Length: 205
Image 1 (tube, one colour):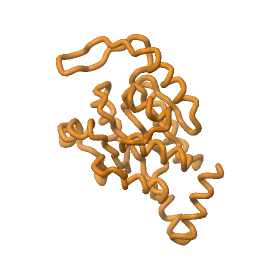
Image 2 (image 1 turned 120 degrees about the horizontal axis):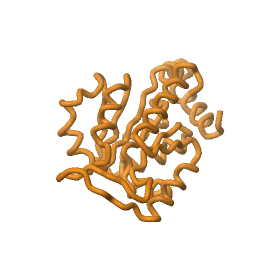
Image 3 (image 1 turned 90 degrees about the vertical axis):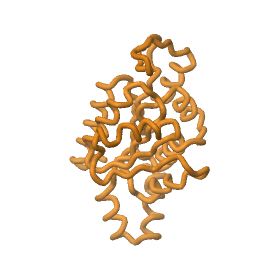
Image 4 (image 1 turned 135 degrees about the vertical axis):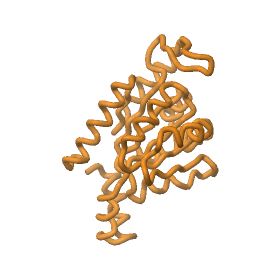
């Protein structure tokens, strides 16, 4: 077990007692952070619907879109939504309390990816990425800007976009982070989720 993760576990045992820690670990959940990217936003929400135990961390930019789609997509029963409403982003403390086994950041805008790469944690999405990293919680990021030319959904329909070199470089750098997998397509994201679920079922978490 990585040093930081084991240190967090020792602290939790002292604070809660080992029986409570074991109970919390057995009931850990997915954490899913949403940003304001329109790139495959509804498809990501459909994937969230398939998860059995998940908490959503919703940035200010994503909040309105989530409100629009919540009833239609029937989020999992028991899904909790944390919004970017406080400067301190208080819900991130749950990562230290052993609530989560995995963080998914999808879809992730180029702005969010850049902040993650450079250690800036000034939004709920970037803050949970930072805290998950400190606790060595496996993280899956669906980076929207990952090719020189893409098609994305805009209010008026599908449009072509051309990510900048710096956007592509940031995506590449993020893939080199510890305990971080970067998906560059919906198929990649689905595969990463299946692999992680398999690890959890077979005790390889």
